[in-house]
Amino acid sequence: MAKDMTLLWGSGSPPCWRVMIALEEKNLRGYNQKLLSFEKMEHKSKQVMDMNPRGQLPSFKHKDYVLNESYAACMYLESQFKSQGNKLIPDCPAEQAQMYQRMFEGLTLNQKMADVIYYTWKVPEGERHDSAIKRNKEALTTEIKLWEGYLQKASGSFLAGKSFSLADVTVYPSIAYLYHFGLSEERYPKLTAYYNGLKDRPSIRATWPPTWLESSQSQDTLKDI
Amino acid sequence: MAKDMTLLWGSGSPPCWRVMIALEEKNLRGYNQKLLSFEKMEHKSKQVMDMNPRGQLPSFKHKDYVLNESYAACMYLESQFKSQGNKLIPDCPAEQAQMYQRMFEGLTLNQKMADVIYYTWKVPEGERHDSAIKRNKEALTTEIKLWEGYLQKASGSFLAGKSFSLADVTVYPSIAYLYHFGLSEERYPKLTAYYNGLKDRPSIRATWPPTWLESSQSQDTLKDI
Image (tube, rainbow over all chains, first blue to last red; front, side):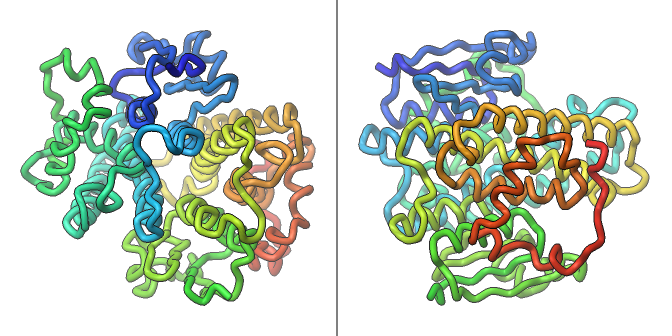
């Protein structure tokens, strides 16, 4: 039981989901956790600010070691619990290189997705421009095509080859987010196959965003991407 | 001699500089390398696009493994050459946690810095707003104060404690970039001490951006941050 760990998280947030998948993969369960609401601004509450002065989720601790950055938490958990649960960094240098490369490219995918989905939330009304919205959507489309191409050329079912790795832990939540926000399942067949193929992996099923299960409301922000 | 490695790079770019520091720290020298010019748009040349479809620098390869993302290259080099040169990931769990946390917070520092320095380059003329410039500057100031606070509380001379680590490899170039663009040396004494204290570290001196050495022109973009 991982009683020396604490996770404050929000449903659907790719960074929170990454950490939860990593914990499941490493058989780290029974940690202290609390689901908070972004809508109610609970990520700016005192409880969060005390753990994370940036006021962001996830806020994560092992003992008194702060690991609020989701990539930091994933790397640390794999390093500290190497022989527990599933091994998340391949030994083969070629696969390891590809794992790191895809993992960090995932940050660009996530950024370009956020630029589209959060546009009206991030940009004050008087500063919004249709030309910027169009450019952000084009950039996201180019980015998604790149990933579709990677999966076309892939030598296995996962982002870094034949085994599930930290690349999947970190990038899968962003890909699921795209579909949650209405990305066409037909337009990107390899990406869709990857998305659907991992839905039933135990670590992913166990951590699927609860608000996505509750609500049948479909989002269509990304339908023309 | 690291003859099985190739690096295409641009002078002053924090992502390029990170990889060069990591290579020096791991005693990987004599690699194939080519300095390209961002001004001449050489990062969009065929030579780069063939290695890196994103058209970005660094473009880096070990054998035929692509590691264009600077964080990916640094992690991979430390993993593959663990016992060569300087060890860049501390064994102590507390220091290791802090190393990963600072390393990934460094991406936020770099983003907020880029939002200010590259504003007119990234935002087309008709979409620029003084309110956005002001907000970006305030966000960068808040971010820099956070790092000044970390260094005030630090237990050693480095970002993750008593030894130079991947946190320094990845974040130092961004901090040096701040000063290159005119950040006040007086306003942030701990950050300035950290910046000056590492200037003479052999890996950093050996890789200092050549265009910064040539030009005595001082930049003042960040003088009021």
